[in-house]
Image 1: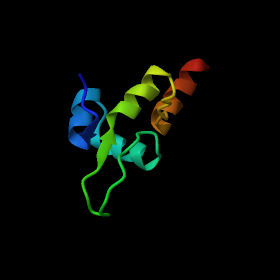
Image 2: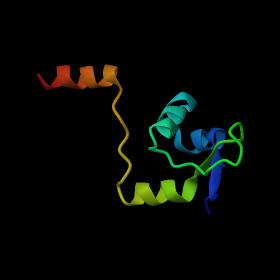
Image 3: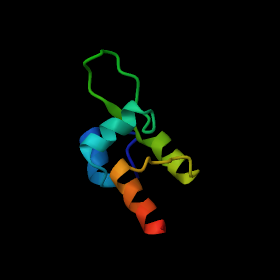
Image 4: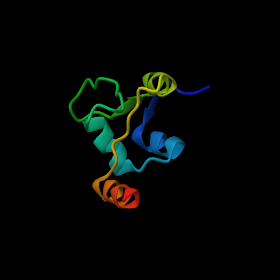
Length: 76
């Protein structure tokens, strides 16, 4: 059974996504979070919504520029 909400640290441990990348994905609204009561409160990831999006193939992770360049050079 998965938790309904998780801290960024726990989410990183479970998914293998780096902390910096998770913060970027949260800022880009790709990873859903629970609304905070205080502006400096703990950021909690809505794990149920994340799992639902993954199951429905609604998660599209951006390709970093360096990786994109590598993929383009391999196609040629």
